[in-house]
Image (cartoon, rainbow, N blue to C red):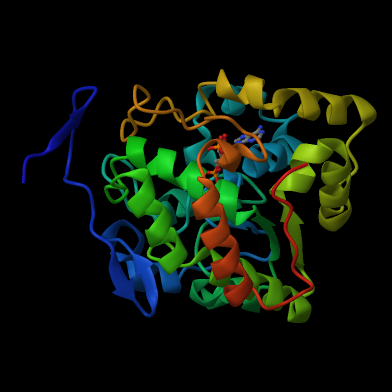
Length: 301
Ligand code: A3P
């Protein structure tokens, strides 16, 4: 198969999805599985967990500014976020594996990004009683965001056209498995693991300050009013979109001519993509798969 060339970097062909312990994955998420499973978490590590496209980058940047905004501003302006908050499970071309980046990370606490379903989280995180923040986003906006992301990201499977992608999402054949299981199983974990803060993208979009206050309460942080204002400004969508250290423009596995990593940042963009029939089908499937009435999502604000 011909290799894809993006801005002079040779990339391998797009990866294939395969079943991995009951979850669709690609080799980029599984190839160093033993090392990932044996990863040694530290008690002060903070795990930032999301299904893909639920706003992990946004949340990671907020957490980074809360922890290090004052002390290491040079670091923040010279090293891309994907190196400062590494993805635990990922081994992709032209980047050191996540576990190695984490082993060499000098920050304390370490902020660790993951998209893994809860059952795949290395056991040391539970043993060390680490703080975990899970952010969920409504499924309709996820499928749209994921589609555009996979169009422009060569380290993900080829998405095909919108209609077939939509069907594949309903079947749960996406990297990291079905959205329904991901958000529901993490929600269930929250009932038994007290150091898990479960939050929603839609709430963060509605009132970022309020959600930052809740995060601070969970993390035992008390930023000054001025620091809080600075964080609110820096993490606004338009500011993140033009910040080369957080917008992934430094990463060569994405083609920004196709789409942007910081694409729209809206609640309700699904309305610009779903047909009426697709929306009805989606709602039908949703009703069957989402049985827990205590887990509710908003698809518009
Ligand atoms: P869209 O594709 O809908 O724009 P992740 O970081 O988990 O991959 O999630 C990416 C999604 O979060 C993208 O959604 C991106 O635009 C959105 N996002 C990132 N930063 C944001 C911000 N500051 N405000 C709102 N949305 C943001």
